[in-house]
Length: 446
Image: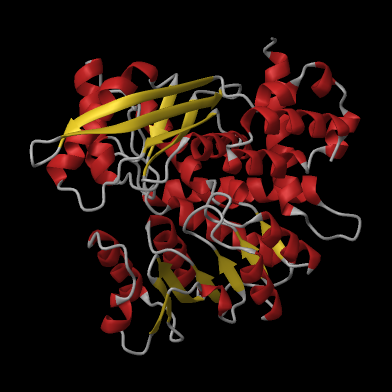
């Protein structure tokens, strides 16, 4: 690691050492920037790294609401507005018991570079709450969302900060949040993305993260003179991202053989067809957060309780669930089974030792900030449609999404090409994302 980056990281570890996920994400980026920092002393002169690791603003607030029993509940709400050098803060809201400041700072930091890679005018931000929507009635979810927005609305706006959905925040939650924002702000602005199609949403938005990830994988395969048709694909998760990835991979002729949940994973050697992909929506809508019923509905499939899908023999691995879901042992198993490439679809889905294992074994690995950028890119396309008071067809949105993912892949290749001709996608994504943000910060002065 470059001496400047090392000094800033050591300082950050002293002041923020308890924020493990945030430190992990900063370390991953800084390890890629050595040559760039050496060749561009302007970054150290302007103390870009010191400024970049501190959010421009962190908003933390209480969210009191009343449950169906008439009891008052208190949750904590957050919005981390990390960097606005390239445009309004943009990033999702996560409602999950695991939400804390470290996770949201890591997500906001990653979001800054992810949004930079899209080349669209978006800064980086993230937010959410430790509220768990699972097991709650619609009325309770509405009560919480309205209470959450009563504080958040004063900090967001179409030219300031445009939140979206994330884990635990789907169409229902976005609807309740937007309705309360509209009521409080007395304005129908496109201040949230992921909206319903009847009131400002965009076609393809639900599928976009998974679709974009598969488009990125296609480009990775093309560099190997391979095609996705006929390839075995192991996917983790069964939520919106995994569903989009399974749908697009199936459309392109790949065989998706796994999905997973907190209870274990499904192995379907027949591959997911379109009926099975649609059944993933039913599983998610059930609210039970388990995948075991898939094997009951499709008896040829097998359910492995308490295990992860990375033990199966596959050509392509696509972690789609949550951060740090794939560890060093999982990576070693994939390497032993001769996996062709790994595309991280969840944010920071692979532990550092897993990434190191892939790179040591010359397995093509692409990080989430590049692979999963299709979701936020399509959110920006939704913002563009809202600003123009227009709707684009699914074909138009999908074509724009495909073009954006092609551009991101090209940027990773350009900045990550190694002396032996291989592509270090981690370095490529970090360098391309960093330089654009850093240069904009310098241009805009102190």
